[in-house]
Length: 184
Image (tube, rainbow, N blue to C red; front, side):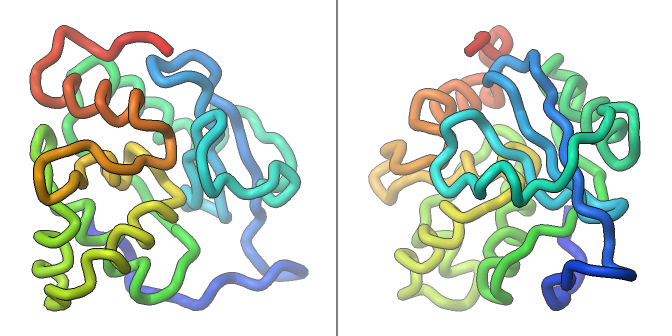
């Protein structure tokens, strides 16, 4: 699922896309806060997530049945049920051009697969940038859908995850054929 071409961060004010949020309360990984910029998903945040922006930056609350939340909820539920392995949603993550390149590359890691930070850096044509890739990975604003949980340490160890290592471990086990995601 390639990300749209990098675009400037939308300005707030008249004529800019409406930023709003909705909370999907009951998932195997705890409540998920979905954030939209207009008709595109701009954020998916877990409770107690590292680098989670302040709640007031998410805009006003909206109904989960409103676009683009309805499609995201449907696809997330199918993913958690084990019937969906990829997402097809309009995404608008805010970040630097390099971060957006990393996030686009994350979408190319297949369901159930993993790459090391160094391997991902190599795919980006920057083999010595594993640390920068790791920093960009950690700032991914659309967890699960942009699968930053699929990046691991060079030794195969689970290193870092904004949603916590327990969630990362559970997501990877689920994608590798576990019996289903355990509840948070």
